[in-house]
Image 1 (tube, helix red, strand yellow):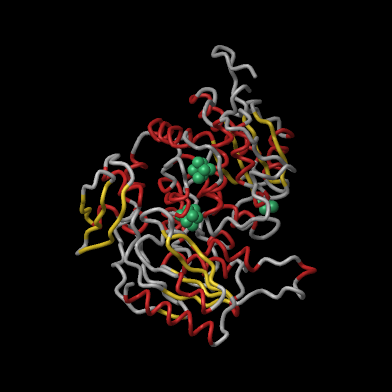
Image 2: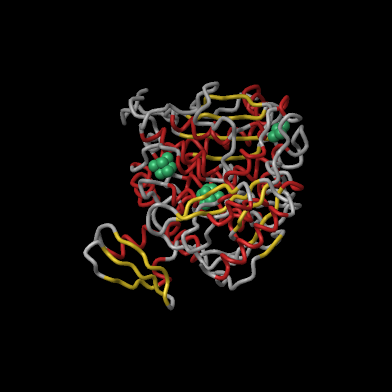
Length: 331
Length: 144
Ligand code: SF4
Ligand code: SF4
Ligand code: FES
């Protein structure tokens, strides 16, 4: 058990002992190597299930809107719980976004900021092992990840080479503004960003279209990307609406494309680049190539970075008189 | 839908704000200004009423171009509908272009009720540009 994990467990036990929270959202060991899974802890006795390691990839804020949603007539009978949540930089920014959108009750949430040193992407590990089959993982030793393949071969993989893309490019690894902080060394913030987006922008229209077609053709419309995203809490998603029916339910390509255009566009000014959608996708679709374009444009056009302040108005709720309108067609 | 090359004429859906651009189109008509007959006009109460999905959906239904036009900034009858919309439009225009849809297929403009000739010139320009591109194929639903 690492140091941070001990501190975390002590803190959560105190929160339960002091009756500060009814439930804690955290991570426990997963059943596959390199995976931790979200878990809900309801009492001090269960706290030992919690883990903190380099596999805590999921964005836990995704559970908050559902925890706090109440039907109007049931508000009195079932008061909202007091929730503690373990937060990496990205989870904490999602919580801020949700507070802004009135999906989280401020008095009922305690955010526990973790010193995040970047999560490991199992897909990268698998790629590095080059199809060597199932493996087990022995953890990290001096900046490398030690794994044993099914044939018994031990391998060391450099930490940066298997760190998730979102973490390599993370601009806010520390959950600033969290209610409680677990002390530790977070990774350094990255400010060299959007290189891939710029490369993509520089391609020809046709090339870009072909890449979009190629990526989206893989999609099986399982909606895992939507389910994993903390911002996708609409009770009825536009793809499921029947009045009007925006798109057909088939896997016909234009339908799938409009699902993605709609979903990603709805993230404008809200996406915190956590890549929960990317990690959830069973078809390895490079959703980041598309989600990040809007993040970049929102920053460039409206100078807005999501999830940093509860007070600041979201960019699409407001405007400036002198917003750029170079895109307007002049006859 | 007739998409053979020789007699092809683009179909363009125009979302026009009731208070300005729609009246501008009317004025163009009343003043007997000539402009290409490729528009299918949809009147909306304000450019702020336009859900970006309308635009994407129109493309899926096989239109060759989409034009959105509202009141000039500062002239919106609901004060700031067009200013809030302007932000959405800027992002949408960039995003669709980024995905590889020709930027000329989706255009935005401002036309006031007194700008009949601006309206006619705008349509002229948009139709020309879309003609240049040829029939829309991207994002169009199969089997249309
Ligand atoms: S769209 Fe993807 S990267 Fe953005 S907040 Fe949602 S899950 Fe995270
Ligand atoms: S998770 Fe992947 S396969 Fe599933 S709907 Fe999203 S993009 Fe498509
Ligand atoms: S009323 Fe014309 S754009 Fe708002």
